[in-house]
Length: 423
Ligand code: AMP
Image (cartoon, rainbow, N blue to C red; front, side):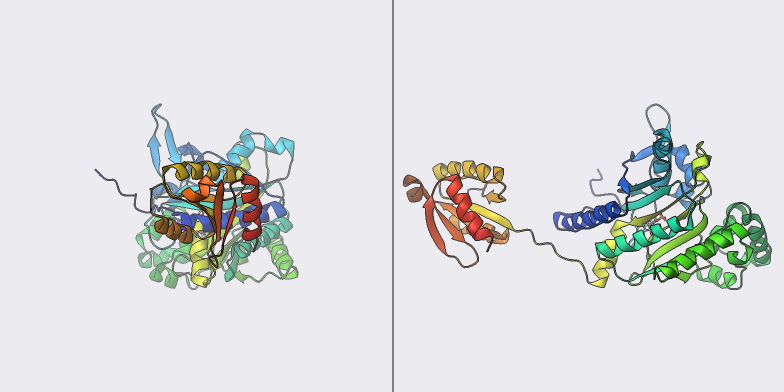
């Protein structure tokens, strides 16, 4: 029987969960500042949605989906990315009829059957945005500025923005043609995957990371020369606005991104401290997807960022803040009778908003004190037999060990605790 966790998944233990929670708080605050509202879609969808949305020829759909047949014989897949689900939900719930410009964000688990390595998992967390309804280059720039700000607010400082344009259905055929002419005589020098891509999705050859393929591509024609007027103007405006808003960027003619649906602007956020898996996020415009899903002609743009990889990069930058959770009060008891009194007090204090713990293992007073220290308790309340007979307890301030007898009254205990907790 296999009872270990599945390769490529991880257990996020409480200390790390705290780090995720802090990052998620920053995420939500920044999204809200830019007017993006959270949408939560199912973790699985009909497989067809991803075949259509993400693209039949992509690695994600071809090699990486967790696909299964449900009991009704339908083909279902765990979501490998968020965009197709958000666009499906946008259409299915008629969001475009409610407001013709929608700014949505999501955060959740994605699943891809990839080769696990540092920063690459089979279950991982992505947050992303989808800005649906405007074709303005200002929106392209807004998403980039938001992406950089979210990353910075979460704690990632050393990020490079890479930018490219992958044109539209008008100019793409002529660029593909010139790339095909350039690559055809050199096919033997390309890897197996790229030889396959030559037939199925030639643009993807541009972002192959293999050394030989990179060598072949050195003098390849770049898309910029082939952009139609509309795409050229759009791309110039995006660059102009980035300069005007003081956002540094690097033009990368090889940036095409792994998904089929992009048009015009594409970009990636690259961490300067990570090794091989250095992209912490990426996105671009996808002006055709809403239509492809049977909706009206509505343009859209979005990005997705990998939370696990971001936290890895922040750790590498040496910036992870360890969040110290302090306990307000630990109740120390002596025997059965005082222990029951302790349990009742525990519940009363928690109800009043004081974080409180007690022992549940019948440990000695010394061991209970140690436990209080380990949990970082600011105070302890000691209920001894003699104290209880006088209807009193001892309050001990953990920082200096000073003690004081007080009445066993919740109001009085809270008053004293508040005095000490604040210090
Ligand atoms: P993509 O959806 O492929 O454009 O990826 C967007 C971001 O999600 C990447 O830049 C990564 O930060 C993250 N990501 C993608 N795949 C994985 C994975 N297998 N494990 C961890 N993070 C991932």
